[in-house]
Image (cartoon, rainbow, N blue to C red; front, side, top):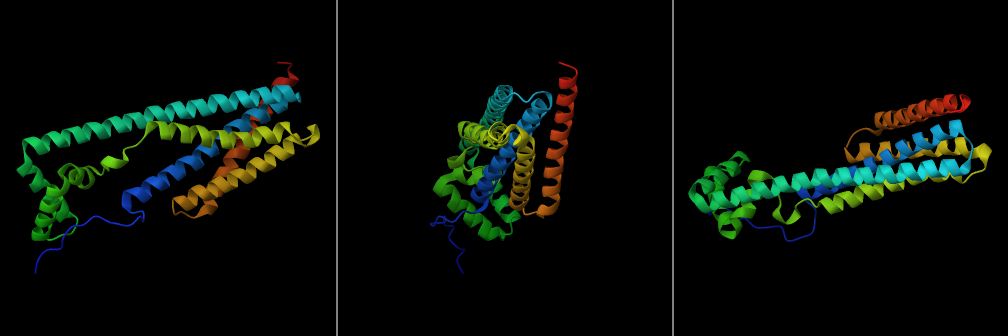
Length: 241
């Protein structure tokens, strides 16, 4: 009996790393939107505790939105750039090792495939075929867990964080400045709590967890944040600060 030939998948179904990466992006988007909701809601509610001037509320909300979204984008760019640099350095090292000691690298790939449940003979044949096809790609995927064609892009991450935070921040900002004065606070608090319930549910479902606790944590944390900032704003407003 001949060992099975190792082939690449020919259809578009997401497998392994591709699916995991998509879920990570979705989770990051949900968390970015959640940060935008909570931070901007806390800011505008706090200012509302000190003043009912629409211009002051709009200015504070826009400043918080821009500062938060730029901070998120810059932080994500730096973080993902560091990750990409590490991935490229690992690939460069692997390429050098393949050039300088191909036999040892073939043995290492065989051992790694055997650890994944293949018999020694099948693992050896698979390692040979993968090495003949594309040695660097084989070692990158099996040994390093990296897809050379799907390296993380810092610009994509930065824009995703910027847009997610902005989308989340717009909700409490618009809820605070658009309604009549008497309705601003209840509309903002109500819409924010509903939005936080949705982001809590979404993050839990993406992580395959039960949504109940996540929703309670999210809503409770947002409520506490708004309560604290409103109390602080009210005290400062009463003191004439």
